[in-house]
Length: 468
Ligand SMILES: Cc1ncc(COP(=O)(O)O)c(C=O)c1O
Ligand SMILES: N[C@@H](CCOP(=O)(O)O)C(=O)O
Figure 1 (cartoon, rainbow, N blue to C red):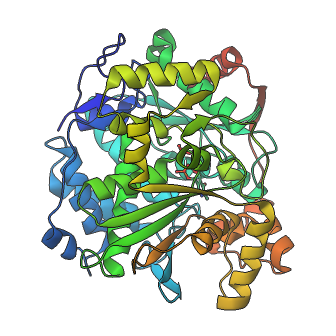
Figure 2: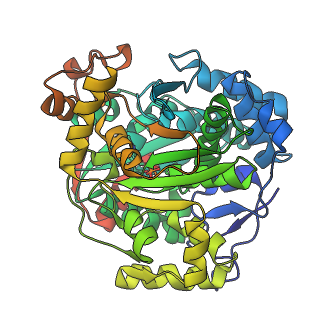
Figure 3: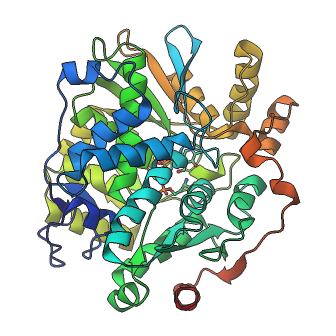
């Protein structure tokens, strides 16, 4: 299995590469994102056979379709078993019924209490596998609106073959999110509070990949959802959840709280692989670029607003480029043109045929702050569940969306409410119970630096860190 860039055929000319090379590369040298040359698939019988299997086995089966000959199956299975052994729930990502036909997929039982752990715990092990064989130490730089950073720090802290720098937007993430990153003492971890938005951090990280000299000097890698392994690992829970509620015998629908569009795109990947997904509802807060794109046919950047679901305060959704590439029939030259134009003007009109293709799977719903808070309260009153504000955005969107036939709706619950105690308390008057992973964070000393959103200053910081 080879991987190509979404800008394949453009002047940048990125050559097809294998799975592990694509994992370590982050962004392609032409600025595009890696996708497999063809999408592998499962038969309905193979999908049905996932029912009742341990999560780690399903993960290894899905990953094996993408890893090709790069990693033997036994090694993959061992990595998956180790990765999901760090989760505190026996089912790893359990499905819980909320109401008739409506389910929550709990993705927050990992070490940093957010869905990012599902992929990141695996990535830590994939990097070890690849880099120890190459006797190489890479520098990972990740941009975070709160959760990717904590999960990445948890996954890579103390590893010999990687060092990690997490950039987070100053004052725009919750205290618990920040402490998951800043309270670890490991020498291979650095955290940087950036005076800007998540979009500023993400643009700076992408710019680093475009700077050949810098990329080589620090041996740069990226674990944001630009990394294709993140997407594959996140596709796994679409299979396990769908099978738990009756797929492939019947189609299912998903509602996904969305920022960078990695998680929703992972659902699209599962559909490509044969999972009968009737619809993926993309739920956003008031940073609604993705909801507007599907509803209005125009992908247009707005100004980032701070909300009670801060991890979704994003106005440039990296993974939309992967969907666009597919919707324009894998025309890399057109994708390159479109996303260069978007970078320049901040807006992109979707070609009608591409929009029609996207709407075969996706619809967008934007949810207000009031509706988010109301949903947290109503869910507690009606079901006894305390949900976090990101999950509430998705649940509010699901409650507002017409059903697709009798397809059950699975709402992705992407973070533990204890990561956002202020928002939960404001909505309900109740503080969520703090799980063991977050206990004691408040009493630990923090270690982070501060810089303006200046690419050169941040590159100099990363260079210095990589030299240590
Ligand atoms: C808790 C939570 N929910 C939802 C999202 C949005 O996911 P994505 O960026 O994959 O769209 C994020 C950030 O990625 C998050 O941290
Ligand atoms: N919401 C994310 C933003 C980065 O998303 P990623 O999936 O591309 O890593 C966060 O919490 O950091």
